[in-house]
Image (cartoon, rainbow, N blue to C red; front, side):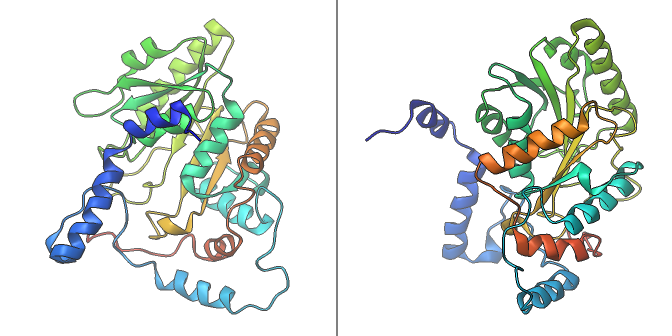
Length: 305
């Protein structure tokens, strides 16, 4: 018996954040929850909104046949329609359910997208610093993650991104608000990034996607907002979840939204749906597709954060 060498190597470089989280659990047992401050995982310490709990009770008590059964791989039609409404409001464009694939959290969603778009040796550029697991998600599907340093204030540095571009670039992955820096990329930065990729496509014949990983979108303060991506770049994808805003990280419920203006949007959606199935996710959890379809816009007070 043996373990694959690439997994052994990856384990050696495993996330220090995850190790810190596990150490924190032990320390809390020893010293008490109030005496240990955990700055590792983005594991919310707010309870889910009462609307979510009430919906859980309702669907748990349901005797409707098929409530917990299989559904089409991209998810229930009503769940996809609800997420299309959500993303449409955020992005300022009209989406339909067919533009959305339900996912097993944002992590599952990113893996499905990477599986769908990456050929062996392809590259994904990511502004640095970034969520450490991105490296593994990319490697899972034969790709290479290419870091591009940000400016001192963690805003996008278009020069480092342009230098990182190559004929192998399949996508640029952005995370705003950013984990770990908290930086919200400006509308102007997003527009400049879109322009740079459009120019790159003219030179190489390959138009990279912009993939926005947005689980922290709702957690902003003051008059801050997260700039919409879809109106400024057609080859774009949003991946998100309800782990942070509804305090549901363990329920693994999220979605993938493909810009309806994306070239070959229908083919891309079909590829992501296929990837969801063959990666073994099969479909997003049935129970929580029902719950978030009714509660995705439940109010949450983030002031304690």
